[in-house]
Each structure stands twice: as structure tokens, then as C-alpha cells.
Length: 356
Image (tube, rainbow, N blue to C red):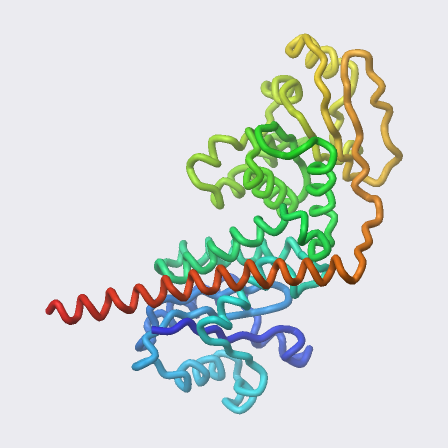
């Protein structure tokens, strides 16, 4: 049995040919179901985003035909087999693992540490589970990559590899509130922003994460999307804010990551209601993700401290090198553990065959 990956990206294919490779969701599902029926294919997932389209397979290499797979891609793209061979890249076993880990962490993307790359890996996992074309091997491979990515978003030593605004928010919180665990958070933003912030805060041990939007239905929709990627325990710690729960959530929150130009959270009536519920003053932190000038938060019944995450970060060569070393070390450990897992599967299969 072997892990395989075939892929293309916008660096390997001429601009006018990208549409031939890149798939909409219906095409992706159709291809996955068809490829799953190929001789020797045990599991298949397709990762597709604006930059790359990659097929991840777990196959019985004794009967799987690489040529048949490449000919299938040639037929689907209306290209010659020779073109497919020249334009696609392929990886096997350890190299497949290294690649999916690098994609998930965003350390081979722009900007460095891309959150969109991580989101696309999680989306590919969810999409493949719904299509019922993957089993334990590819599921665990993708889950391990996602877990490592979130772990490294919280790692101080890999800060030079996480150069996105969302990572800046997280590191700013870590610096200012003395750790993220056992605290309550309020977040808002796009689907991708809410997804990342909710998951990374839960990974850090958050007591609760509340998702807020001006439109309650929008907050409910985003919460439902995020919960699809969480386990049962994590789901109980995520809420969407309604008009009825607003004051309670604001009274409990330790830190907010919101755009105050889009959400009115500090008008007089809200402050008064929050003060009644809480009764005692509490230090709360705010990261304002908007571009307007900081709002006046000098209210007698609130103690809100604004964190500025937009201070320019720069890292020297030693810090950058050390971050890469830390990443490589963690990557090597994960790859070694996963290959041992695959080896154990092979041993079990052989033992089962011998028992008959």
C-alpha cells in the first residue's frame, strides 16, 4: 500500500490552461467517485483552491496503474498524455506527508503562514468525507496536517513563519493577556477569519468563543460552518450571539476581535446593561480589526484596553532560520509517526491474510 499525490498549480501550468485542470465542486465530486472505482484505489481526496488542484490517493501499488490514472486526467482535461506528464507533479509516501503538512501550515504560500491554505485543507477533508471516498488513512493524514498547522500558529518560535494579520491578532493576545487558555472570546469577520480565530482559540484552551455579526442569521450560519470542523466537546464551547444573549456574552468576554466600525458594541444602552449583569468591573481587551481611528473607550463602568496588533514585525536571519529548524523538527516527528502507522497497517493486513 502506498500514499500518492498528483497535482498541478498555477506555477506548473500555463495561464490559459489552468481552467482545464481546476474543478468546480460538482466536477470534483464526480471525479473523486470515478477515481475511487479504479483498480487498486482504496481512498481518494482532492484538494482544490485558487492556486492548486491536487489528488491524494491511498492505493495498492501492486495493482494500481499510474498510467491509467494519468490517461484519465488527460481525457478530463482534453490534453495529451505527454502534456499531463510534463505539467503534473507527483509525490510518494513521506514526500506526500511533507507536502500536505507544508500546504496546511501555509509555509509554502504567500503570505507566509497563509490561513486560506489551511482552510482549503480542512475543506478538502470535509468534502471528501461527505463524498465518502476516504477512509482512515487519508482522514488521519489530513487531520494530522490540520492539527500541526494550528499548533504552529500558537508556537512562539515559529512566529517568523506566520506573517498574516490573523496571526498578528493571536500573537498580540498572547503577549497582552498572559496566555489564551480558560478565557472567553468574542470574534467577528469573514467566514475564513471566524473559522481560523475560533479554531485557534479553542486549540489554545479557550473557555468559550462567541461569534457575532449585525445579522443574527449570519452569525448562526458561520457558527454552523465552524462547528462542522469541531469535535463534540469543542462544539459546546462555541456560540452565536443573538439580541437576547448579547449583554450576557459581553459581560463575560475577556477579549474581542471585531471591527467596531461595523459592530456597535459600546453605545450607552449596551454599556449600562452589561454593567448591570456584571456589577463588578472587569479588564477586557479589544483588537479592533477596522481601519478607522481608535474609538474612545474611557467609560466609567468599563475597563477596556485596546491592543494594537498592527505594529510592524521584523525578524532577523537567526530568528527566521530557527523558525525553519523548529518546523522541520516537528515535521520530521509527524512524518515518522505516520509512516509507522502505515507500516502497522501493512503488518495487520499480512497477519490477517496468513490467518486464513
